[in-house]
Amino acid sequence: MELSAYIITWQIFWLLAAALSFYAMSNKCDKRLKSYSVISNLSFIVHYFMLSNGIVWAIMNILWLFKSYFWIKQNKYIAIILIICYITLGIYFYNGFLFIIPVFAGIISTIGLFYFHWVSTRLFIMLDSTIWLFYNYWVFSIGWVIQEVWLLFILGYNIYMHWNEIKKINT
Image (tube, rainbow, N blue to C red):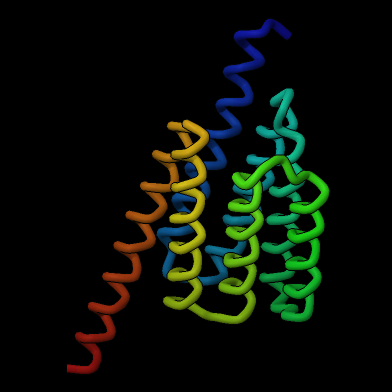
């Protein structure tokens, strides 16, 4: 495959994954959030495997895929195993202080996904996105910075709308 076609292909997988991620986070329904997160992560995995230096991030997304699958199944005991996997991968692939940030973000999102529901889950995802935003800023990944800002906006708007609906019901 010609190099430019190859680059366009892996960028298409990134755009598809980002669009699915935006759609997943904009849903009020936890079930749709879960299922679209799985599909989004599959696209991110393909994107990272196509990158020559993306194997570590592909492995992290495979872990996120397992996390999403077991989140759908509501198996809370798996959360402990996933946290241990994040820590183990962090130790194995340790390449300086910056690599601790994605591991910490993975642990935060695991706790939020498995032990909380609706607004609380989304608040943990917002914390996770904020951590990723700072990481991506430090490594000068503009595309990911833009994605995290959009995710934070979508999640914040979704939570705001949910709280307004609750206020209307209570009044």
